[in-house]
Length: 367
Image 1 (cartoon, one colour):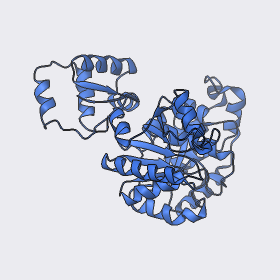
Image 2 (tube, helix red, strand yellow):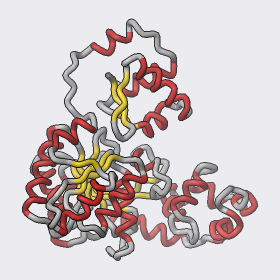
Image 3 (cartoon, helix red, strand yellow):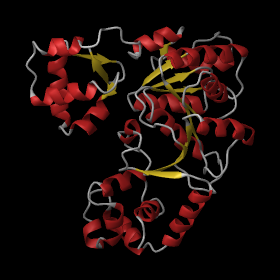
Image 4 (cartoon, helix red, strand yellow):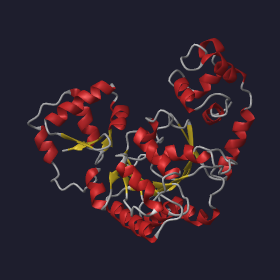
């Protein structure tokens, strides 16, 4: 008997079945059921058709999936499937979210506050100082830091997170049987040991080829509430990530630099084109994201509720918001069990009654 994981891995190996098609298929049946389904059933699913249906029904290379499981055990990796409760919920709502993620360590991929810090591999001293200052402030606000484990700004963000004792997650463009660059192997181990970890959609043995990095960048952008660009030129991975974050309706911030500095040209361009908010101080970011520490007295919300008659839908939303400081709309849609229109209606009524506050990035919190 094959395990669920074998079928989940196999789904990522079927020719012509990408992340979008896998998502469509999983709306109709479980991973194992997909491989046992008749071609006539599969080809009628919108977005699949006869060619992809044939690819699924003809797939026989389960030994490759079994070999991957052995590699995962060897390198102490976990697999997180699209339907797993541990799957990053922010990323789940991106149309091209990976079917399967590989993880090393024990990071919380659904932490209440998550920010991506990205930038050039050849940073200036100004970039280093500003990154360290930003991470120190975000640590006080209990924000999990995500980056790409690359040289430069990425590495500074991870190292500063470790120094300030907050979880940090490195998203890699290759299999987790290796660490690239190798010089960051020690830092990667420390990240896994201190509540953070490594994440990738690539199987063991996949090398850090150039074309893998844009795919990696969409995970960085999609799994976080905000993307902060510290230093970057007019082209490169950081600009791709910022563009993706905008497409996913995430907040983007950029640190300005001298107009004559090529390493700040990308940041200045993002600000000039209104694709990123101007970031001059960490407190500005924390305020705009609604990440300030709450000062209201315990029980204040409960007292207000005594004078407001909540509908069953509104009660569900309020109870969910009591669990965390802020919750994105995507998570409320997933966890409430309500339709998206039901959630939107309940939130609107709660805002009108000053029970709930709407924050940038489609986040909500109790008022």
